[in-house]
Length: 241
Image (cartoon, rainbow, N blue to C red; front, side):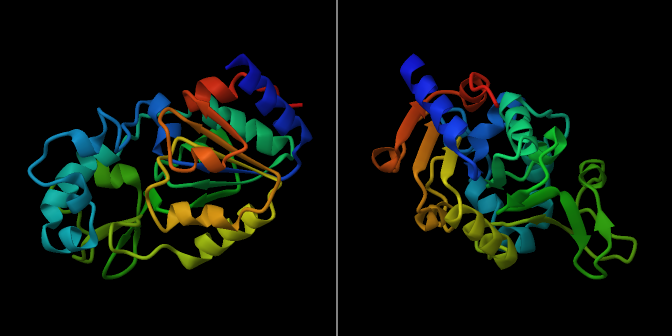
């Protein structure tokens, strides 16, 4: 591990256009559960499987059940940025980080101070009435009961990309451009099994592909450096200079 940390330090020192591609594992150290680990949401027992609950069809047909799960498991509004979020914000301030491309919807990167963040799957912090378009905060949703309803009577929907919904193509194109022009991409805290998000990495043609994750992924054999460990613990050992 010590040798790999030293190798990562050298990569960071020699890089000028770093892109960070992160998943749920980046936020687990902030107390937000992941999906696919042994204790993740997909291995817990609910009336419906989480991947069904978090689908467009379920939202449209069983909206009250959707919001029961959503408030309970997706709105971690007390969570604070961890060491990984803070390190990335400092790397951006130093001018070495071009962008963060994230599959997370918790807004912790922005809370830590990062400015260029492409949220592939949307954010819990933006919610709109489906009828009139009025904006509502995540706190409004958390403090509501049943189906959150606008003053106009319309249902409110989070700006979160559910299963069977399309990604925002503007966000996708910005992410592709950042990855394609990066000299280093750090992939962290993701199983790389969720598409089309994981497929964006095929646009990387730079020098260093770094993978930091607790578990093995199908990309381990293609990365220039693989570190199995906690994202925050690994990154906090790297000096930004």
